[in-house]
Image (cartoon, rainbow, N blue to C red; front, side, top):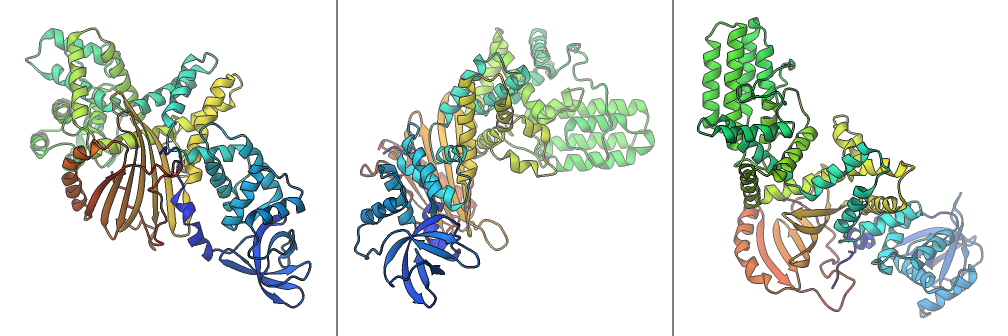
Length: 630
């Protein structure tokens, strides 16, 4: 069994949902139908699949006969031309198809016959031009793409009235694949690294985003290195040598200015005033104190009290001395000197607190989506920074740290890396998926319509930058082809996703790399929406297709019926059964916390008799939904 592609659940449900949708016919289309009832003036009731409609016929026919019809007119009523002669219900499918090929002067190739057989079975109308174009694609399929994959992609193009272009076809067949995303990314990255003709800024931005995808935990590891370096600088017991090494490392990464010394490294200069009620980063707290006028301290105290109380990344034990510091300041005369002393004391307390919390709150964010490292950087930098800049500082810090010949620096990196590995949990996996999807920018077009979208962050994502690259005139043919393959993968995810009536489907292909282990992960999410527009969490169907270095191909089928969860794992290796047993209890407890009940976890091998079909993709009940939690 090789799950190189899947049959989308949505496509399998088309037969159920199409009965509620009117059949839309266009001039020139061909379809297979049966005459159910004759009426005067050469009109008849035609049945196509589960649907019936009234049409005017060019010649009188007999009720009960099946024909291939061609649409010759749609206004003011549907007019049909009989393409094949009357075929009895016992006539074979091949006889009907051969008669149609002769009548329409179409080539009798194996590909054309497969196309007609597929659309005859699907009960879908298709035009001669679409058949001709589809036959060309069927004759020149890329390696690894089966004819079944191609037929499903062509059917979706016809059903959803997509343009019959090669770009759309390639995107759809790429969107159906469940492996190979990592190899596509690696091939593009290798060609990009060798390229010398691209604008340097575009090349560097793309390389940074690829690096962020390849190492989704690099920023968090860098945050731990930053926190440990700060702890060394604030530790009176640390040696002068260690302090200088830590400070120089932060200078090289751009975290501290080059003129920083052991005496003034934490001083904030060039303070910019912050708008009232806009306190978010810890650095803004200090800037607000320094920019406050002496006659406005009451409002400042209220702001600081509110910010401290709402800061979820600080413990109650850490908030207590901060509040005491604020109360003492409130009792002093408000002068420029007292404000400066107060700002310095608050900064020292906050630096110490956030540095201490970096390990325990590694993958945690506050209400403003800021992490511990974001707050630390805001306290150390002399100017405001964005999340994109913060990640760049962390990558620079990690690069300099890993390359450092100093044993003390190497020890910090080793400890940070080990801590990240030991902290892998559901929050870590959620963070990795969000990091990869954010940097890919698969749906950046939709994000642009959001008025509150961060345009700078969007511009740095891979997909919009690929658009820019493909417009460059000096791109090598090899790099252009690799970029087009990567673009087709991302477009395919969007085209394979969508809705069919109340059913909604989402496809995500995620290239993951954890500590040197690479994995292709594809998520097929299918569910329905409630009347209020929210996902019905009581019913679920999620399929995970995983390609892992050790376990190889693995498919996880998760189904939820009335909040009762069953999980089936498909893998060829029976040795995973004893490994999975201890994890069932944790899964049961985790689901119970979300008010779900685990009915069972089953581990099976793939069915050898169906090499091109994933055995877990089956017809679902009409009422099913999805609740996707990581």
